[in-house]
Amino acid sequence: MKSALEIGQYFIDKTGLANSLESNTKLQKLLFFSWLIHFYNYKESLFEDDFFAFEYGPVVENVRKSYKRNYADLKNKALPKYSEKEAETLTLTKDIFGDSDCEELVKISHKSPAWEKYFKNSIVYDSEENATHCTEKAKIPKDELGEEVRMIENVLSVYKYQNQNSAEV
Figure 1 (cartoon, rainbow, N blue to C red):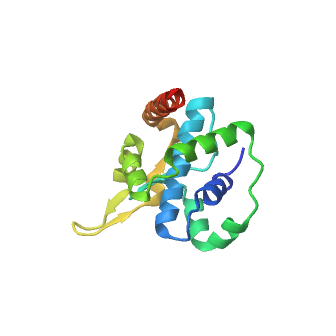
Figure 2: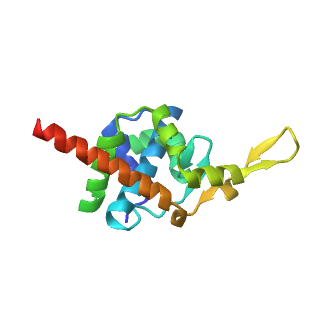
């Protein structure tokens, strides 16, 4: 099983993500959607790294930090060899979500009930006016992503339907 960083390298390479906060955010959403697609299709994790509920949706914190600090190294690093299942998941994720802009992907990820629950739980108020984000409380247990997996099932159904109809035309 690859790490989320190794999975992320695929999206950096294949979608032309730039060295920017917006591209880092888009990468995070692609990781989230790819994990959901893989879990739906194969009933197994694509990677073991944890998701955390941040303001702009689910985030793999170690990937976010690596992207921010070492973008050039990630961009220039050779892609790992992906298994057939991994490659299928990554290609499908890229085909469905790769052309979407960051803002659109954030809006979609905000429909996640688990993200909403853990983001709200992660806000800590030290006074009436001052709130901070507690990363430890923001960890999203993957076993709570059932509703998100059902939502991705609908996305995949629409995608397959559209591709069948376009192939028939």
